[in-house]
Image (cartoon, rainbow, N blue to C red; front, side, top):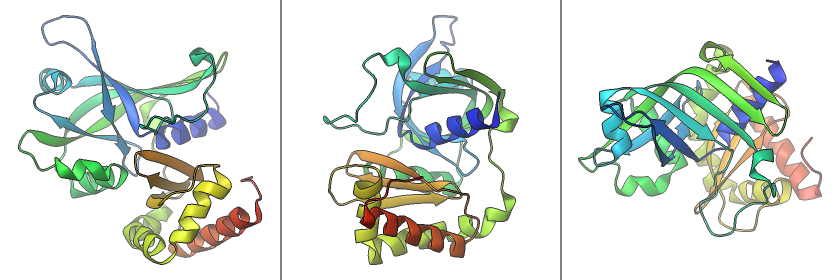
Length: 249
């Protein structure tokens, strides 16, 4: 495993809004795979919103072992982003671990920022939030690039980034309310996405999360940002680059 592979796997997971969830049948039957929406906590622990009516939820209540396959695919509309003609050449990362109920308000906030449409049913009596504790990660970066690493290496660290994490909600609200044009420029000018009412849904030391309806996007920073002032400088530099047509470095 190389540090580059680990960073690549992390960024692939951060870009993912949907995933395939594999659980085990409690009666010794075959594994069960299903489609779920996913968000990531600050330590890259996957956060899920699951219904008691779903078979995967019932499986997890009997046995918490699970795996999530993420491909960096966030779009759930008809116009899909370009992808390799051979799916086996595509990048993907699998995280394996155990899944448990979570009543942490931060997990709820993180998930609903990523998936605002879920606010319409998140408080239904049969829905609850869950968090995966990651035990192992397996990356396939197309043909021939395969790495496996321990879950202990998955969290990105940077305890000194606590000031940025504390200010995340304020930064996101400020950008959406006062700099919506800049947010749109990130998506269209740097990521080549279509025009639309893009909004920022999250910021962390490594980049920002964007959303336009059912489409999500991830824009990485050139270098890690640790404080709100670092973030301001990085966001200003990115919008200048977007407006001059310079691609991300």
